[in-house]
Amino acid sequence: MQGKKVGVTVTEHLLRQQRLTPQATGAFTLLFNELVVAAKLINRELNKAGLNDIYGFTGDINVYGEQVQKLDDYAHRVLVRRLSQSEQLCAMASEEDADIIEIPSTVPHGPYILLMDPLDGSSNIDVNVSVGTIFSIRRRLHEGGPVTLEEVLRKGTEQVAAGYFIYGSSTMLVYTTGQGVHGFTLHPALGEFFLSHENIRMPKRGKIFSINEGNYNYWDEGVRRYVDYLKTPDVSKGRPYTSRYIGSLVSDFHRNLLKGGIFMYPADRKDPKKPSGKLRLMFEAAPMAMVAEQAGGAATDGVRRILDIEPQTLHDRVPLFVGSQEDVDEAGRFLRGEAP
Ligand SMILES: O=P(O)(O)OC[C@H]1O[C@](O)(COP(=O)(O)O)[C@@H](O)[C@@H]1O
Ligand SMILES: [Mg+2]
Ligand SMILES: [Mg+2]
Image 1 (cartoon, rainbow, N blue to C red):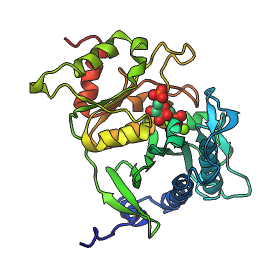
Image 2 (cartoon, rainbow, N blue to C red; image 1 turned 45 degrees about the horizontal axis):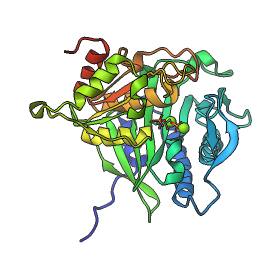
Image 3 (cartoon, protein in one colour; image 1 turned 90 degrees about the vertical axis):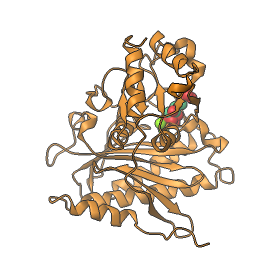
């Protein structure tokens, strides 16, 4: 039996979207194509991880005090190298760099700012569990001159595009430009991403919860009561929910995007240096929140809409509750102490 007829490429899909945006110049499509090339390079290294010297640590510590994995570093360098030559960017920022990354003055600058988590799910790299790359794209505020921190530190509502690559059993790209959420799968033989999941809609309510329960005793009471509630049998309400936790935000999010459910990384008292939880607002929470909302889901820090949060620094951390609308709403009621 023939496989599914390969169809729409990323470029074709972007050009379709571009036709719906009168002021579009094609710059975004050029930028996006470079992002796709960088992801293919990362994917190629990952696919042969174990045969190449890509496992283990570089010996460096990043701005979050975490040990940098060789693949974190490789992915970061590939993205910076490729995208800084795209002629569509005026600045970048990365989870793996303390400061704004300037575009060389030798390269023409463009209107976009790219923020990225080069490799998400680092703890899963050398155990062959799916990982990803997360990206967020914004337009600069002013023409010309060096990009200021003020131009980068803007709410998630000002993203013009966001998404992720997931390097799993298949390699996928999931993105939104504010016109719905679309998924593409990499055809290994053709080396091209083709549209495989058009206009993804997240189920309004799920049956899956994803949270690192090892931190249970460090959570606020509201979070503990909500997770206990999800595990309390009530067949009429579809409980108990199933627990699934991969430990890669991209992979846990992607499963819930397709099947419904809620991913949570709450604030906890485990590490006094991280009172707001582990995940990064600019590089992880804001892009995933844009994808979730565009697919009919929701994302909060337990109280505030993630996309409305004003970043204070490039490396802000934020509690994250993201997934099906009704589940995120219900979690919010428990955290506000309104639930029974
Ligand atoms: O091991 P923990 O504490 O459950 O944290 C897992 C979370 O940390 C992350 O790995 C953080 O992202 P990075 O791998 O990009 O640092 C998320 O992907 C994941 O959801
Ligand atoms: Mg990450
Ligand atoms: Mg990372």
